[in-house]
Image (tube, rainbow, N blue to C red; front, side):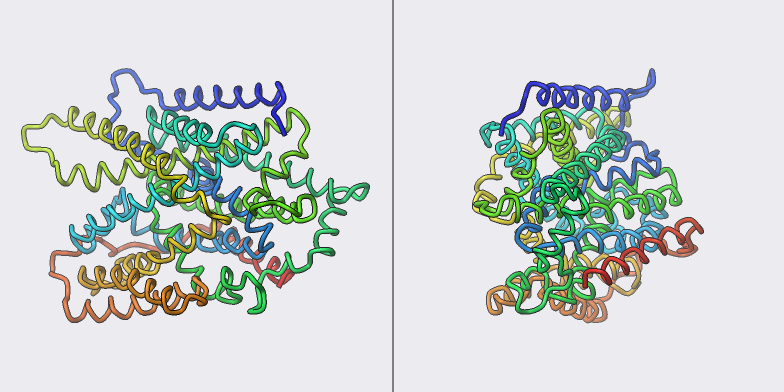
Length: 527
């Protein structure tokens, strides 16, 4: 498969347009000097549509499109639970978490930890998140994106790797979060349109004269096991998605940690003009999540019929792209690259935010004689330099870390599962239990890694999702006990919850009911 001239023209037009748009939306008014709020939080003026689109653009990248299509090829529709359950999680985040974060003017998740517990836990978790973002998330995004470029365009994978990383870095360096978020509406539109297009064309290829509906019917008829949403213990992939634990157990822990306490995701909502605006953006993102399996999972299932002999499951989506005609191939390829660039740029900006505001500015505070304007300009420069260093580290380590992985999406989930139970405990107690102390938070963090390692070593057959559930309960118990034994000082908690209302608008409530009804219908259909 090669790109025709028209495909290359389409891709080049996309690149030029997105660069131009990023520059346009990031332009400054005469006399205004960009400060850290502009660069890291888009001046806290994001509208709901930009928030919702940017949430999805940050989330849906190569690790989702390539990785989840690969898991769809290997496992089936059950992998869609990550998308559908995320829609419900987003509603919880919007209703219960955001009111506290926005009331307290939280900019980063480590900042919340410092105001709630103390400086030591902030520093520890800032370092942890930087390591996770650079060596797990950022590496996986550019690595899987480079696979697509190699398979579709025939470009050497290492060349593609550095080209994608460099493109995303330059794209966000000038305008920061505003450039990323305000252009994400274009990225998501292209992603959804291109993804639905490839799903429709592959289903039509399978259906023949019966078209798309016939193709889908053939898939469900010939591959019924690929449409089981709740896997049974005899399923070879039960270890990845262990039955009802998907709905009632460990996936909730992973989702709450990812959507509620993950800097590069929640940063969009923290940059909202207001709480109602943030909540509208959350609902918009939740509806888009319901649609995502049609874009990222169906092509993988279709590949079981169209390309049954793939060397690796992660080759499923690129293999399906060969059925696209010239011109359309360039458009869908641009959509895939849009997802990679948008998510990579979002991750880079959040890495720069955490490093600059949670580490650098704390260890190199301004003195009383420092000019405020000069200080803000310096912080923006530090953010840009740290973004460049982080990107280079990710590009240098992508192949050693992910080169031997068959299903990168599952690798990411399992590795992250060592830490997410502790993170979820720390934040849930910090948000809703005033007696929680820094000692309890440290205990939860240590217990999460320690118990996860022990269970992985001595019970290797235990599904990682069940492992997260067990570790979560153990970390929660340790955090509660330590909080009673070593209580926090009277002045350690600076998070205000008094007067916060968790009531939401009627439109939010109606939309939430609609999303819940759709989820019930989906699971009832493919139980």
